[in-house]
Length: 435
Ligand SMILES: [Zn+2]
Image 1 (cartoon, rainbow, N blue to C red):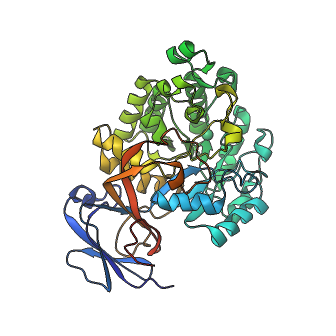
Image 2 (cartoon, rainbow, N blue to C red):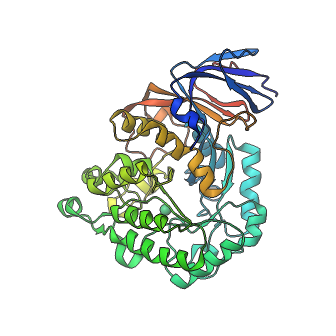
């Protein structure tokens, strides 16, 4: 169906990172869309359909480099259809899905399956990430060349770290020939000792075995030495500690090809959230201390941390209605990211323009995805966010198949009200574009 031409009238346009227009966003602007593309930006534009978006943000469609869609193999938690509907509802138009499916996405046939299913039932763009090692076992490299041909945009063993330094070196060298970033879930398993939360005062008080912050930073320090040696692109997933931020800052100063991301939950919560043994607060890496959290905000502000990615990790009650130490780590992220982040903006902890860049142009650049900008001629993937819109996060309202989020029952403000994929509404909270 050709959606015809459309004008979004009078919004605050966030054009993209480094765009001088970004800072003059308070000037109300119209965006005209036709034929799946943004045709022009300006004032007083006309079209057959006009949607008033005064006081709302118009941003490029959000891009999430880190989600778990669980298909194939664990569709009782999530599948491509439910996960991409959750993405659209959260304002996302592109998601990159991690390879820890069953079977693992470590070969062309699985990559092709994900790409095909996404075209058939997906609501937004799905860009698969291939496994670094066969079966995520950390022993033999996957067939990266084959998966690249089938459409992967990065490689990662996410959920598990690459423990072998020699293997990581070979992965970086191999990935470099295909210009693919290597995404590390940094967790030295020998230091982590299967700790279920952050090692520190809270863990001691509540009697849960913790894992030290250095389990993350020690691996990042090691990896950065190998990155310098190989010159290959390296992306640190879900940075959670102050030391990791410092290491990445130093690496960037030295010009290494390093990018990294932080999750909304590591920005919003500390290990105090685990004090009531709520298994939805069990994530990996674990929620850290207030000092770590402060370093994450600093890292975002000064550009050390490039992206905000959700690590959307759906789990069923089978994995979560158990003792804290036995529970699977991870929480939902796609539908809660915008309200959580706008809450942080309102509390003065986060700059709204920096936040939007970390959800759009920065991830597009980190993985070389294209998109993430709002300009005449660009594909009309975009989202309209109402920063003041109350959002009661309740079990009935979520599109995801799972419910594992500690934000359930809370009302925050800030919500994607309209998400367009190539100019077509894939999420339209108020039915402004009609049926
Ligand atoms: Zn991970």
